[in-house]
Structures are given as C-alpha cells and as structure tokens.
Image (tube, rainbow, N blue to C red; front, side, top):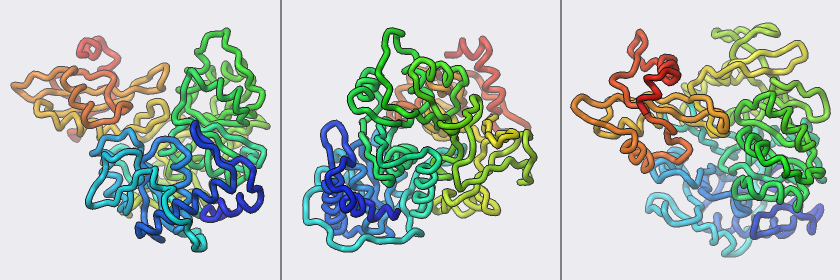
Length: 490
C-alpha cells in the first residue's frame, strides 16, 4: 500500500466507514480524504513539493495525521517535533532537517527563515487536484533520535521502510479492517505513527487519538470506544496496575496491549494480564529499524522475560565486537536485518557506515537468542537513559549544565526507578571559587531542557571521577549514587 494514496483507497472502498477521530473531530474515510486533499492544496500553494521536508510541531490530533498524508501525497517528507521542546531544541531539528515549512499549534516558532503555518489553516484553500506521488525510495519520515554523544540526529525512513514495517505489523499482530486502535503515545515518536496510525489504517481499520495518556480516563475510553488494541510503555502499565483493586473495567474488546520502548518486568506482565484479562505482548525495536523488530506472539507462546520472535520479514542475530555472529545462548550485540532498516542518518555518512554494516543494523544493545529463537535483552552498549519510554541523551543534559558559569563539569547517569524505569541523576563539580546549589541548577535547566530530560537529582561533588584516558567514569558515578556520600550531596 502506497501511503501517498491511502486516503484515496479508503474513500473509494468504504466512504462512510470510520477512519480517524480525536476528542473534537470524527472523520469517515471520505471526510478524511477531503481533508488530506485540502491540506495538500495548502502545502502546494506554499511551494511544498517532492523532496521537501515539512515539520509538524503539533500535539496528538487528527490534523497531525491529515498533514502527514498531505505531505506524502506531494512527495514531501515529514519530521515530527515534540511540541514540548524548548525553542532551542526545536530549532535544531528544524534547521538540521532542512524543513521548508513548520506546521504548529501556536506562533512561538514563527521565523523569516522557515515558513510557518498555524494548523487551523490546513483546511483553508482549494483541494489539490494532482495525482499522488508514488516513489518507494522517497524520504517519508525524519525521526530525531537520541544517542550517547552530540545532538539528536535524523533517522531517514523512506516509503519502502514504512510500507514494509506496516505490512510486518499487520502480519505479526494480525491487524485487519475490524481493528480499532486507541492511540495514547505521542505522535512525534515512530511508535505512535507506525503502530497506532499506519498499521491499522493500511489494514482498513480505524483509530481514536488521545492527546496524551490519562490515568483517570483511560479505562473510561476503553469501555466507551471499545478499541481492540493499543500500544503503551511499561510506565503506563505500571500506573494502571497500581490502580485501587476495586477498579474493574470492562476490557472485553481488547485483544492485547503492546508493550515496548523500555524493558518491562516479568512480574508486571503477569500481574497485569491476571488482573485485566488481556495479554501484554512485549516487543523490541528502535527508530533506526522503523520502530519494531521482535514481538511476543499474542496467539502463541509468549515467553515472559523475552521480547519475542522477529517480525515476519526480519532477521535477528547476535554478534561479538568484531561483528562475527555468535551461536544461540551467547551474549553479544543485537543486529537487525530487513526492509525496515533505515536509509541512514541525515548528513552523517560516517555514523551511518558504523551503524549499518554489511546490511545489518547494529543496535548498540546486548542480548541473547534462545533455542526457540526468542530474544532477551541483556543491557545497552550505549549510555542512553530511557525514562518512561523517552530516550534521553546524557550529553545533552551535561551540555546544558555546563552552560552555567559556576559549573566546571557535569556527568549524567540513569538510575533505576520503580515508576519510570529510569530517572536522570546529574553529578556536578563547581568551578574553583564558585558556590553552586542544586536549586539554582534546576532553574537553569528549566529554561533549556524539556521537563522529562531535567535531572530528578543533582549531586554537587568536588570532582568527577575519571578513567585512564581522562573521560568521566560513569560506572564510578553509579557507584557514588549508591553510596551515602552521593545521597548527602543532594
């Protein structure tokens, strides 16, 4: 299915069937198609065409999806931006991606350098009359992802990638036109776009969008909307599982919940299914692999403690540091191969060459494959922190802290947290002659970092530990965190 003409297909095959809805808008297939044509007309009038990039800095709403399909119809790519980013953070993505237009929900990013379009204007203007661009090699999504060094980098996913991943999802998860997905994850993540939008829509199913997950209203939505599946992160399942025991919602419409983005405990998976009566199928993947590479089968053997089997059409291998594939049971770096593997990192050929080697995507994660082919995650080669499913750069936070005049250096680590999986802890060494407090540094970070990136604890210490080559020793920082000295430094 070419996504540039998906709205045409849906409108022609079942014009009055439900397509997509949010809290204020409900669109049938024909209404969705009309909205896509109108938005494509607006984009075309602003000079958007094949090869251009449109930035979508929007909350979860129907208009995000309309704008995405409108851009694809013209042969343009989309880069979704977290609307909660600071201006500095968002500007990096807009400039780095080469965006020609920013669609937003306010005017804070209006710029003479990049055209800016309020989302309300998407429906203003004549419908686009041209044929949809069909090019599987054309760039579709630029997803900005975290790593361990530098600023976020753009993962280039072309139409062949997203079409392959959607087909894999339909097959492995058995998604059909009877499915109704409840979207609660953010649309600026590839998970929200692929698992909760592209997969059900390309199967003929429909989607209900919520702006964000709400603990107070989630099960009300399940009972009223009757979705058949949803995708969430372990933090969400932990919060739902901690609800008072007297809360017993009707979950009979749900075939399963998908759990990904961060490891979930075996205890959580078992306890949740026992309590709510539907399975959680845990998977594994990353943006560079267009979202997902393994999944525990909901209608087959689900091995708790593993992230399941490879999606149909993908291969998983375990390798040593030299790239040599290892036998079953051995621990090494997880490699992924398939049509879902990214084109590369935008403007970073050297990093791309290090990440995609001989057709295999090096994930930077360590794991093992058992005798039945199930993958278990052992750890991460990278220092990336995953807080509630959000990937966080340590260096980005370290750089922000180092901008404070009284800070000599900073080291950031992730520490275990029962609710979020991990939280951010920063160690700061002050410059000689300066007095620095955690309170002042928190205020400093508030102007530079999105809330989820800000350290939950800031420890002021005399000097940061270093390794033999002079780099900050993160393992020693983790040891400090566990000691009484680290706690006293807050």
